[in-house]
Image 1 (cartoon, rainbow, N blue to C red):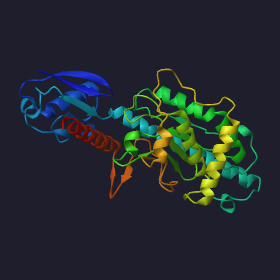
Image 2 (image 1 turned 135 degrees about the horizontal axis):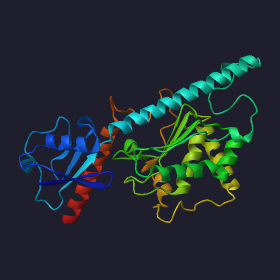
Image 3 (image 1 turned 180 degrees about the vertical axis):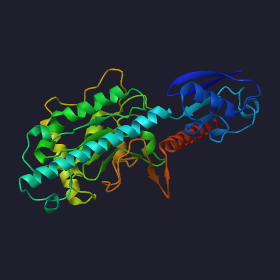
Length: 336
């Protein structure tokens, strides 16, 4: 019989015997898509729901609701090479940052300049007086395992080159090594959505560019406001009065310097929700949980959740389960 499995929006048809099990299907998925069984999670609707390795040895004809009009199998998982490439990229970023820090330290010793410990903490400023081109985002990194990373790179480029953002970064001497996008599934709970993150006072800034379903991009002005918020965390970590005063100042400066008037779309095909910022004010979405300190930024690595660490795939699966529960609840309400 034919079993259709959906992965990243594309259907894949697998021919299996009537006596085949879920493990047999998982093996075929690995042979076709190069996604190891331990990296696979199969979301089966309407039941039995989320399945992961080790997979059931029950025949598919008994396990799957093949006659249901709502029957669908969605595969969550990344090819082994994609995961290895992501870790390789993060390692490359780390080495470049170490080399840059070493070069700056050598230059300070050569010129008999004060050490970093004698200056205010935070890597967002440079010790010398470089040209204005130094006050920017030095690297833009879309998430390559999500759909259309080239469009995310276009969005990140627009933020970097935004006249208002550029003017504010030059004025406050912000120099950020990495601006990247945030995976919505890793920062979504049943109660709220996180819009941005600043690690170690400007080492890395992450922004939630995409909609939850990955089918478009969020309102540009909302993302730019979030970026203003995260830039303020380069100076102040806690959400105290000084932080909010600086955030408001940066927002004003960005608006005043935005000679292009902002708000235009990347393309006419992208989806934008102008109600984003209203949901932030209503508490449904949060900008961040204050600046993060410590740890390393590892693309595709671990994310802390409660008392244990979850992999990116587990977080995506958990978010998918939450969405399924919400849809079931809404459907129950409509039927009633």
